[in-house]
Figure 1 (cartoon, rainbow, N blue to C red):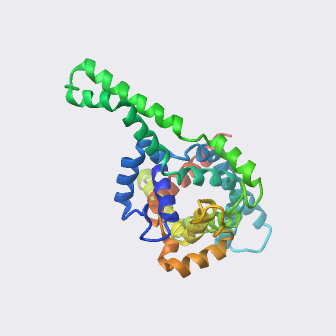
Figure 2 (cartoon, helix red, strand yellow):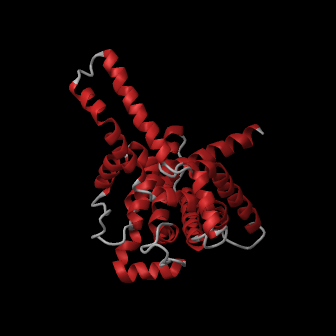
Figure 3 (cartoon, rainbow, N blue to C red):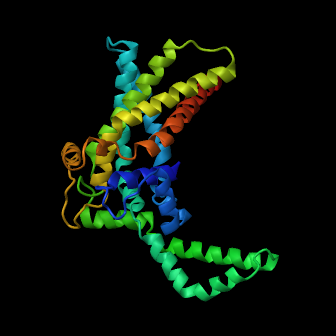
Length: 313
């Protein structure tokens, strides 16, 4: 799913159609990234999500259950309970993941790293690659040489990509840990996660209680999967303006050294005024492709694991 996240971020930081780095479509973005940055271009910034994923999901679901229990002491309808608990879990989750998001976005928007490495590699080994092209690579020995050449290219790519830790240190050294440094864009992240979880949990549990359960376990699985898919899709559609604002705040500014995108709602207003309403929905398709099925799988994993733990512990 990470390649879709990289593509989504790239779309969201595009400011105008005349941008030289502008992608024309989802397919075009995949072609351009693969051609200019290689296969590893789709996995830029993958370490922060990996590091944050376990605590992020733990916070999401554990706080959701805790907020539900707290709301049980208040006279609130079950439908509203799920919605409010979802909002609370999203806001809590955002505080945990925001520093990781800042690092991830900075790595994902780095377009030139792999391109430079590839050019450097071609300059250094053009003769060798030309020889390999003219040879019959179907021969087993030559196949090995060809694969070794590819591995050398991969190694060069790895050297050129800045490490996650080094980039995080660079942010802390230049901008600190506050709202202009490792926690910039916090308000937008709060809006993104709060609204998504509010819709995600609220829609899922309310609709699931309306649609009758099925005795057939396979049909019941698909019933839950379908509701989870729609929950993730609707949540993505509603919260994406906050996601776009977050990418603009945490990503590179139009003019180096000048901060144009600083606060969440002012960023949204600026985007609307300069680029139009639809600009607030940039990256929606890859976002839905990731969080539609991803949201369904996440809820199913949680529900089945929770049921198993209750039955066996």
